[in-house]
Length: 257
Ligand SMILES: Cc1cc2nc3c(=O)[nH]c(=O)nc-3n(C[C@H](O)[C@H](O)[C@H](O)COP(=O)(O)OP(=O)(O)OC[C@H]3O[C@@H](n4cnc5c(N)ncnc54)[C@H](O)[C@@H]3O)c2cc1C
Figure 1 (cartoon, rainbow, N blue to C red):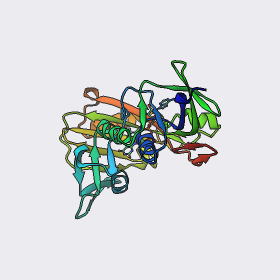
Figure 2: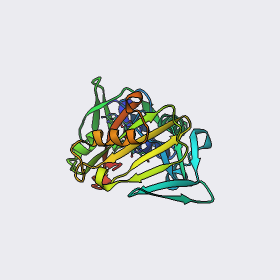
Figure 3: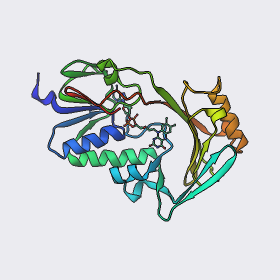
Figure 4: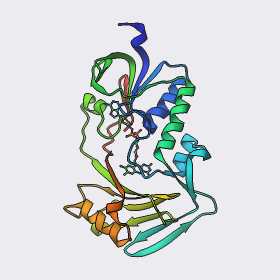
């Protein structure tokens, strides 16, 4: 084993979890390597909404915020209630901007980040990349999202998995943040309109276990059309959302969900 290939911590995934862990550990003088299969950080379907808790915890700078809100409109059974506060309590941003900023922070702290580096196999002491490279860890962090290879290596269940889908409305006239609860259409999840400047994310969460419709995408498209959103014009994106929490610490392997 070459010492150059041995890290105190290898983190799989340069999403918000992996980059935060990388920054914290590198700033405590650990030799940290973050492996990311994509070519940039933050290339993930996301509405870009940050709550007060996120905002305080990761101390997001103003430069990556596109819009801040003191109010939100909550729609339930056709009724709308406006929740208003004296100070901002919810923010929106472009996920790629957050990724770029978090990447710089992790690098400044001393973490090494390798892009285009997909982990395809894990054993008790090392990870293997698609290009055949083998890298050794003392500790491993699985921050690799909803379809995690670390979760599979640990043999953890994958049962509670939902999804999110949205359109990126590029000529948005939406100015207010809107959240819609419509049990008959979407079950116990919610739909949203999150404006961020000229773009708005218009989306819905899905939980197949409780879904009220055979085809939530068609249901969602109809819902968009009812709001004057011509779905044929805009980019559609979707991704899994795994919420099957099974613990964090598994010996020298840590897991972000
Ligand atoms: C449509 C949609 C809208 C959403 N809107 C919001 C919102 O407004 N606000 C909010 O807080 N949350 C939102 N979410 C949820 C949010 O995106 C996730 O909770 C968040 O991304 C989780 O961060 P993470 O760092 O754990 O994982 P991820 O962001 O998924 O990052 C995991 C990273 O690991 C990489 N990776 C995966 N496998 C490998 C591998 N084998 N080797 C190397 N790299 C790998 C991936 O490429 C990815 O970059 C939304 C989700 C969806 C689907």
